[in-house]
Amino acid sequence: MIEMFLDFVGDKYSASNPIPVPDNDPLDDCSESSHGTHVAGIVAGNATKMFQTGFKPIVPFLGVAPQATLGAYRIFGCAADTTTTGTYKHE
Image (cartoon, rainbow, N blue to C red; front, side, top):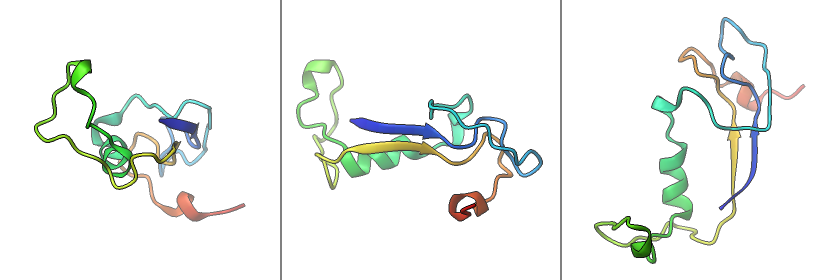
């Protein structure tokens, strides 16, 4: 379950537009290259009791921490030219 979420930069944040426009919605309009859901499944996935939902995994699986609480924090905009500098820069 995702308990915490925040978009630190907004969709238009990029190397050519380095002005963040944060909001409380971490979902974006450009998730084609996103891998967060995949990583969240590896960490906290629990597909051992999903048969009643209509989803039937090939192999029922557990993530490495199935009872973990997740937070969704967006630190990159939609542009592919965003750098990692903003992920560790503290002002």
